[in-house]
Image (cartoon, rainbow, N blue to C red):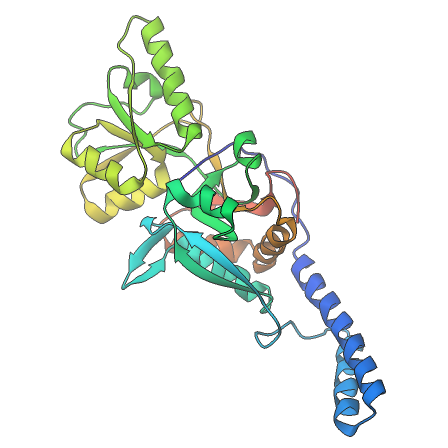
Length: 319
């Protein structure tokens, strides 16, 4: 994962994706008409007539899958249920369903080729061009992450501490309760490491043992570490933890209050050099509508409050 910080903005017009599609159709129609005039053959005239009718119609049809599509390589984590996981050899999860929504709402303008991408390799793959966009449970909206990528914000999720079933070590749900305990998080997430390091300093200042931070490259290793007792708790997004706890029956999730760790805004990351692609995907998700996004998250065990609406770019920009 990666994580967080949030503000709501005024909703962008939901018709933006449709407007872009109509504009493209009208430009296409004009080109077809000129070709028809130049060739002067019956077939061309027929095409010209169809195009002219389409361009002047009050409600031109949406771009279909037969039109030229922008095919984007999307990297999705397959070990972060419910955002991404393997099922019958296929990657499924709410990240995948969000891409399907964007495809449908774009009227065929967008197509995604999905491949597996681990959390620790996601940003290098994006920077190198191996993928055009990266979804690994939602990158945190933060100044540091915006310096590396363009972020399309689509979820808001609080934090939790995942512990062994029955909480045998008596872990509390606040960061202050972690003094002297072994707590894991992602090795490439400064966002989740920072509050734990800060709390560790507070523990020492109060004459208590520090928090012992244990870092892992992925989520599966952290679930195993909690299960075997290597760590006392795993600090991350509560929605991902809750799904795993329900799935396995081996864990409990303690919800960390927002006063300790505010909800993070989860984002799809795009290369800095691709602002138009980011805007296309953002517009398509907004065109899909709030209910459609909510239904996706509800399907995977999240709640309506986890939807970031409207979908924004870099926290405050509309699309």
